[in-house]
Length: 258
Image (cartoon, rainbow, N blue to C red; front, side, top):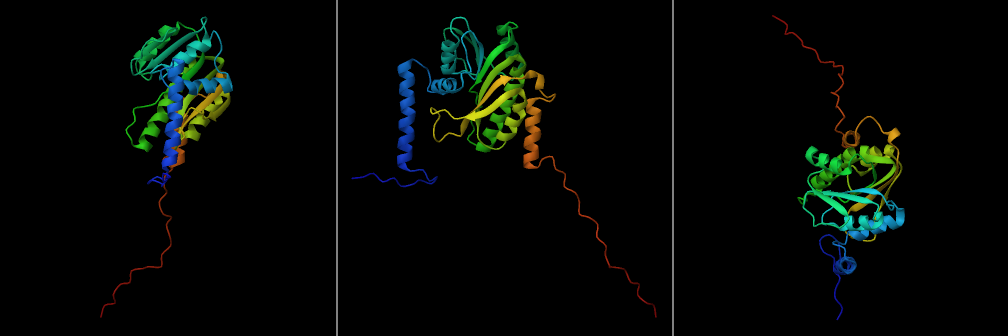
């Protein structure tokens, strides 16, 4: 007896769910077998295989490092001569070869701790799998996520060496193109990439930025230019003009007296 693959309310069949769950479990099994804390480790590995962002001896900042899968991969890539600094709101179990900080990267106290850990050295690579707390309201969550990414760019770009690389997770939706345009002047190449380890149903995509060009940086911050672009997109900067005056043939007639 064949199982029916009737579509649900969103048009996704039972077969689609089975394939997605099987794929997800496959990456989880591989992560466990390889000693990685999360399946997301394979996303970074696939980004590295395609673009070669991290080299031995590099200084890497891992933003949104919990639970530590990306930090594990980064430590492997930089080797004994490299250094990995991670930061996340959630405390993370130690990763040998990395320093993992707990705090909000948008707050000055956390930024100062990162700067102290770097000790005045410039970063070779910034990797970010950061994501805000999800409320379930997609438009709001996606907007907050994009603004958070812009803030991470504004803090960390001044710390990135000339020629350095940056990769970050984005969620497809309103403002993606505007954020990419805000980031583009800072790098020679900026492109999107979806690793095989990402879920089919996920709207996530990774922005791959290579060859940092700090001398081309605009005066405005990434967030300012991003918000200007979004406001222009949704019409927030437009001022509606009032109706033009029109000539009228109406006139008041006085009543004739007897």
